[in-house]
Image (cartoon, rainbow, N blue to C red; front, side):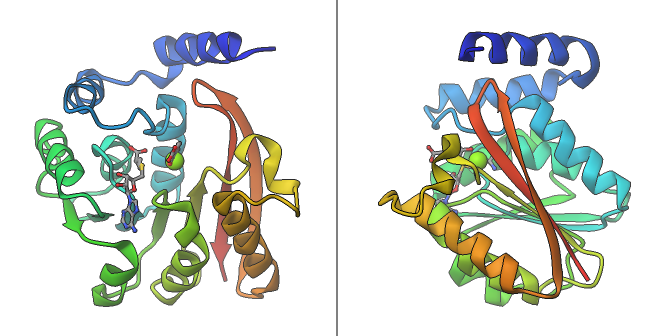
Amino acid sequence: MSQKTWTAVDDYLNGLIVQPDAALAAAREASRAARLPDIAVSAPQGKLLNLLARSMGARRILEIGTLGGYSAIWLARALPPGGRLITLEYSSRHAEVARANLARAGLAELAEVRVGPGLELLPSLTGPFDFFFIDADKEGYPDYFRACLALARPGSMMVFDNVIREGEVMDSRSHDPAVRAVRRLYDDIAAEPRVSATSIQTVGSKGYDGLCLLLVS
Ligand code: SAH
Ligand code: DHB
Ligand code: MG
C-alpha cells in the first residue's frame, strides 16, 4: 500500500459519493493560485466534518485555522438558516483568500473569518458553540482544547486534525514539537472527565494521519 493507492482511492470516492462541487474546486484552485500551502483537508475529510456537524444539528461552529476556507465551506454548508461559522486565522493573506472563496460559495452571510492568533481571539468569543474544528498550529492544541472546552456545552463535539502524524505520535521520545503537543493534548483529554474521545488513523491523499473526535458531557 502506498501514497499512490491512497490518493487514487480518494479520487475514486470523490467522483462517486463525496462529490465536491464547483465552489469547492474553485476554492482549491484559488488557494493554489494564491500560493497557499496545499494542506487543506481532503474532500472525504471535509465531507466527514459536514456530516458530523449536520448529524448533530450544529447551529454555531468554531474553526481554528482557516487557510483558504476549504474546510470552512464544508462546515458552513452544514449550518441551518440562521446558523453561524466563525473561523480564526493568523494570516491576513490566508483570510483574504478564504473570504473570497466563502463568498463565491454563497456563504459570506453565514461565515465570518477573524484574523489573529487563535489563542488571543478565543477569549473574545461568546459560547456555546456546538461544533469545533481545530486545525491551526499543532503546538497550540493543548491550549485550544482548554479554550474550546470553556466555549462548549454538554453535547458539543470537537474534531482535531493531524493527530497521528505518520504514527510518530506514539513515540514518547520524539522531539518534534507537533508530536509533543499532540501527546500533551491526549494526556489532557485522558485527564478530563467532561470529555469522551477517540482518534481514528486515516490514509488518503494527505498521507497517513488521523482525526481526534470528542464529545463534551
Ligand atoms: N482548516 C484548513 C487548513 C488549515 S491549515 C482547511 O482544511 O481548509 C492551518 C492554518 O492555521 C494556516 O492557514 C495557518 O496560517 C493557521 N495558523 C497557524 N497558526 C495559527 C494561530 N496561532 N492562530 C490561528 N491560525 C493559525
Ligand atoms: C500541515 C498542517 C495541516 O493542518 C495539515 O492538515 C497538514 C499539514 C502542515 O503545517 O504542514
Ligand atoms: Mg490539518
